[in-house]
Image 1 (cartoon, rainbow, N blue to C red):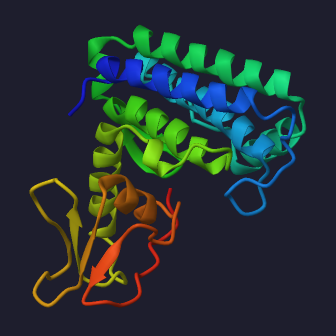
Image 2 (image 1 turned 60 degrees about the vertical axis):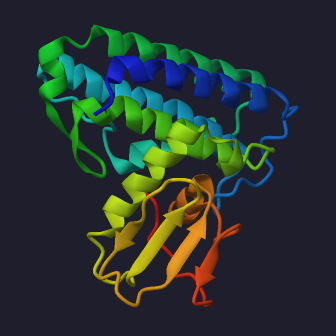
Length: 236
C-alpha cells in the first residue's frame, strides 16, 4: 500500500492543477457541472468541505477521540449549498486553505495512528487510505468542473489505481454482468465475474477508469463481441 505521506505530494500537485483550472472560470460558478443538480460552485465547495471532513478523520486517527467526518448529512448538504453561491475569490481561498489544513493534519498523525480504522460516510475506512481518498476526490471532481480538464489528463498512476479500485468494488456487486477489461499496454486482464464467454472491454486505463466512475458512458472503449456497455453503479 502506498505510504500516505509519500502520496501527499500527489495531492498537492492535483490541488494546484484544480486551482489553476478554477482561476480561469472568471466567476462563472453558476454554470452546470457534470454532476446533476450541481453548479461549478457546488463542486468547488464540496472539494473544500471534503478536505475538512478528512481533517476530522485524521484528528480521530491522531487522538483516538471519535471525530466524524461530518456532523450529519443535513449539515454537509447545507454547507455545500450555502458555499456554492460565493464569489470565485472566496472559493479559491477556501479550496487552498482547506487543502493546507489537510496537509498539516496528515503530517501530525503518529505512526501508530495510521493503524486506525475509522467510521467514514461510505463505511469503515483504514486511516492509511485517507490520503488516497483525498487525491481521488480532487482528481475526479476536477473533471466534474466541466472546464477543460478531463479523464485523459489524469496521471497514469492515478488512473491505474482508480481502475483497480473500481474493479474491486464491482466484484462485490451481484447485479453487474461478467466482463473482462483489457487496459491498453497493461499486459494483464481484469475480470468481473466468470470470464468464460464474457465480453472484453478494451481501451486506455483512463477511459476504463472514467467509465467505471461514471464520468463517461464509455467513450474511447471497444467491446468484443460488440454490444452495449452496462452502467456501473453510482461512484462513492
